[in-house]
Length: 157
Image 1 (cartoon, helix red, strand yellow):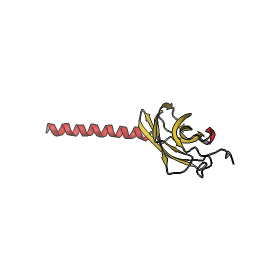
Image 2 (cartoon, one colour; image 1 turned 90 degrees about the vertical axis):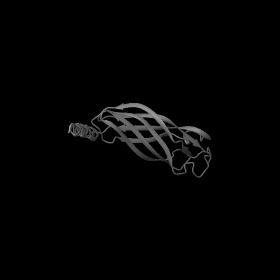
Image 3 (tube, helix red, strand yellow; image 1 turned 30 degrees about the vertical axis):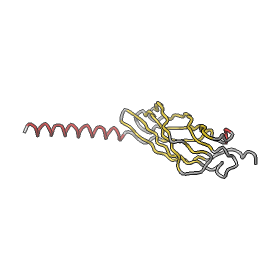
C-alpha cells in the first residue's frame, strides 16, 4: 500500500511539472525571421570555386520571454543558380528582448561555378534554414525557406 502511495505521489508531481512546462512553452511564440543576401557572386566578380556569401538577418521576438539565437543551419534546396551553398551550422549568441528586433550579418560558405555567362548565373538560389533559440521558458526552432534573387548587371555582354 505504501508503494502505491509513493507511485501516485510521483505521478502527481510529474503531472504538475509537465503542466508548468507546457504553460511556459505556451509563452514562446515563433519569432519572425527574414534572410537576405547582401553579397553574392555577381558582387564579387563571379569567383570560381569556394567563396563566401554574405547574408543579413532580421529577427523579431514575438514572445514574452527573451530569446537567445544559438545557431542557424543553412542548406541548399534544388539546383540552379550561380552558387551552391554548403550545408553548415553557424553559431551565434544573440539575445533578443521580448517584443524587440535585432539585425546582423554573417558569411556563409558556398561553391561557385565562376561563369558569369552561364544560363544559371543570375538564376535564384533556394535555401532552407533552421534557427534555434533558447529562453528561460524552453527552446524554440524556426524553420524557413528563402528564394534569393541574384542581382547585378551582366558583365561582358
